[in-house]
Length: 230
Image (tube, helix red, strand yellow):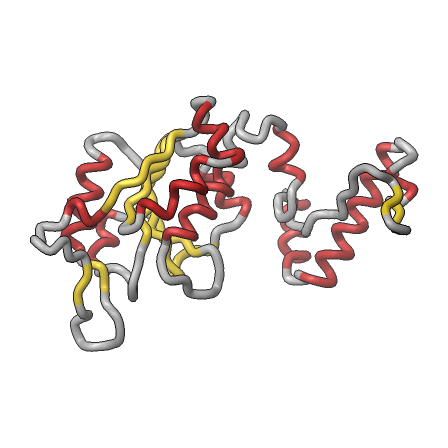
């Protein structure tokens, strides 16, 4: 998959994209990620990319011209699914991330300031939010989306079961996990995880996931029921 990011602050991505799983995925040719500085495409001699909103109001709005020209230069004649990261967008879920992983190419536009000129939506296919809160820009949401989507690309995690077994993948929060030693400072691993009985372990994990979800995110239980019916 190829992911390209249109941003006013490309330097924010350097550490995140080069480290850990994302770094290895790129080194292994499973993922290609590039950042593009929107400021480089403004026709303003002061490299200005924002202005006051018509009708008044606090803050500044990203101008259409630099974004249109940056998008045109980056996309070229090749197809891509273009996403604007914005608080008013569709909520990112594991299900949607898996769907996005099927695209060969994504272009992510990071909003900033008080948002972007509404006319930019003429060159956007989808708006996505990572939660019901407001951040200072779309850069952090873009990083979250990239990390989430990459987990569904075959080979990135090294195990096809990993992405399917994580929290939210089945509509429930994840069950408790333990590793060695079996006893640590008076706290013991549940005996059922040590007996090697796979069916009983799976049953216990499901019960624990249900209990955790019911206590912390009961709204997900309805989604879990729908997923089971599919």
